[in-house]
Image 1 (cartoon, rainbow, N blue to C red):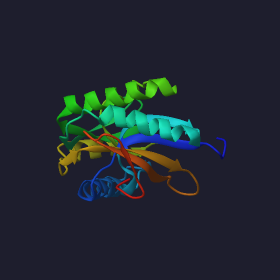
Image 2 (image 1 turned 30 degrees about the vertical axis):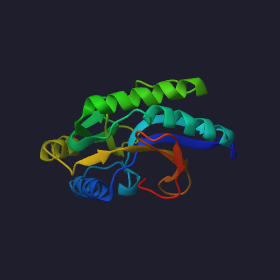
Image 3 (image 1 turned 180 degrees about the vertical axis):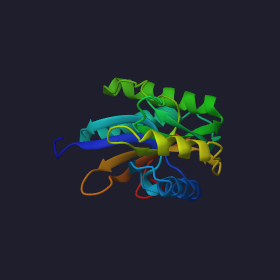
Image 4 (image 1 turned 90 degrees about the horizontal axis):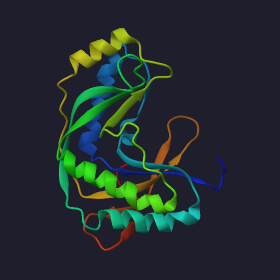
Length: 202
């Protein structure tokens, strides 16, 4: 990717108690012998749209787009619950925690963000459209025996509920070790505009 371009995505940030619970779950799965590329707890988030290589000049237009997508939204609640894999049990490559709660509101938010980004040349993606929180990825596929064991052992996992009332445009910085996610701008539900973001929950 051109060094001048930004690698960006739009996501719902997770509060610290949720990330801590997911980090504990990941640690228990790893202790059970499941190998993969585990997402650091601080990097776990709920992705709404992946933009990929982005011109810095486009960030202002993205700000306007996510403000449009959230202007008429009402806050809602979600709860991490259950486990799953993508694309399926025959070739499991992504391990994730599912979500319970106001899923219709989440679907409406995802759709609104996708539609708002279309004029910027971002095609809505239907891949892995189920709302989920990625815990780990396999280089090829997960070893079926430890995978089956952890899915069975933790199938009834339920994490802390969290309140969704804003979304964030993140920049992903790649390098040695895990990626670093830096918030660029946030958009609050019902707000008339966006706010510059210098911190927040990745």
